[in-house]
Length: 537
Image (cartoon, rainbow, N blue to C red):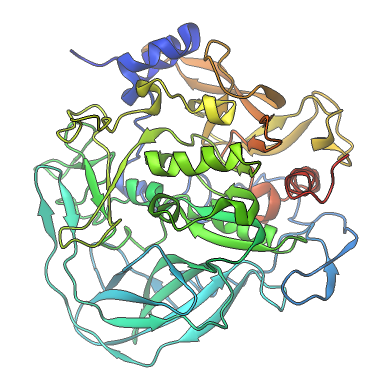
C-alpha cells in the first residue's frame, strides 16, 4: 500500500488526532534533508545565527549579580551573548574544515560520554598519512567568562590512512573499522560538561567530534542530557554520492539521493559524523550550555546513551534538561524519564519533536555495548518478536509522546525565515518579570519543527499553553496550510514540572548573537528556578 504523503498525513493528523497517525506516520516526519545540507543547521552558516534581520545586536540589559557555581565569585547573570572566539570550530580562523570527499582527517570517539578518571579512544584516519594533533575544548562558560575553553592539546601523533569503510547489509550500516589512534585518560580535575575533540593536520585541515564528560554520583541542580541518538540518526557519513547513509537518506547507484526505501535501518557510532564532524543541530545544545553555565545552578552532563545504559540516577538531580532536538528514544530511556517524573524530578525539553521514534540501542559488530541505533520505521522489523516492540513511532505503539510531555510534534515549519513566538497566559509565574502581555511577540524563535497539544490524545499531564504561534506547513497538493506552534508547561502529581519549548529556536534566544532576548532568558530562569526549588511561590 502506498503510504500517504507527509502533506496528507498532516491534514489527517490535524483533523482526526492520534488515531490517524499510524497509517502514514513515517511520511509525516520524513525530513532528514539532502546530503549537501546534512551538516548545516536550519538557519545561518553552521551555527544558527545567519539571519541578517535577526532581532537586536546580541545584547540586552544587565541583571543582578549571582554566585558563579564553579568559582564562587559573584558575576552578572547572563543577559548577553557569551563571548566565544570560535577557536574550537572546524572552520576557525587559520583552519580549513574537512569534507567527506577529501577525507583529509576524520575521526570518531569510542563512547558518547566518559566519566572523570576514565579513558576514551579516538579512531582517526589521515589522508595522506601524516602526523596530527588532537585539541580538547570544553563548551559552556569558562572561568574567564568565555563560551569555550581549550583544556588540553595532545602531543604529535603518528597518523595513517586507515582501512576502507564497510557497509553491512541488509541494514545498510556504514562502519569505519579503524584502529584506535589516541587514548585520553580524562583527568579527575576536569569539569564535567560538553566537549569537542578537534583533529588537526600540519596543513591545518580540521574536523571534530563531540563527547560528554560525566561526573557520576555527583548531585546537582540540573542534569543536561545531550541527544546523541538523534545526532547519529541524521549522520549521513560519508557524503560521497556512493555509500553514505542515515536513518533518512542513502545514495542510489546513480549517485542521487534516495529516501525511506533505501536508507539505513541501523546506524553506527563507529564512524565519524558527516563533513566537518559537527552533528546536525549541535548548535542548539551548544547555545544552551553556554547560557545555563552562567546561571546560579550546579550542573552535570550526560548523553542519551547514559539514560539507556542505566548510568543515571535521576534522584541525584532536581531537574533533567534535554537541551537539543531529542527525537530517538529507546524504551529504557523513556522508562528513566517516566520514573524520574513520578519521583518528583522535573524535566525540560528545550527544542521540539522529542521522544518520537522508538529505537533499539544495539552492540557493535564486535560486541561493544551501546554502539548502534536501530530504527526500521515503516520497514518490517525482523527483531520485533517475542514481545519486543517494533522500532516505529511511539504513537504507533499507543504511547504518544504527549502522554509524557503534554504536547507533541505537529509539523515542519516551512516559512523561509524564523517567525515570532506569540506569548499567552502571561499572568503565569513562567513569564514573571518579562513585562509581556498576551499576544505580544518575541522575534525569530519559531523555526525548524513545532509541537502542540492534540486535544483528542488521551492520558498524560494537563498542559498550560504559554505561547501559541501560527506558522506555515505543507498541505495537500503542495499548498501551504497554517498550523500552530505551542510552548507548554505541565505538572505531575509528584510535583515535578515538565516543559516543552515546542520550537527549535528557543535556545538561540538564550545565547546566540543576533537572537538573544532578555525576556526568554528571564522566563527560562523562572522555569529552572521553580524546577530546582529556588523559588516556590
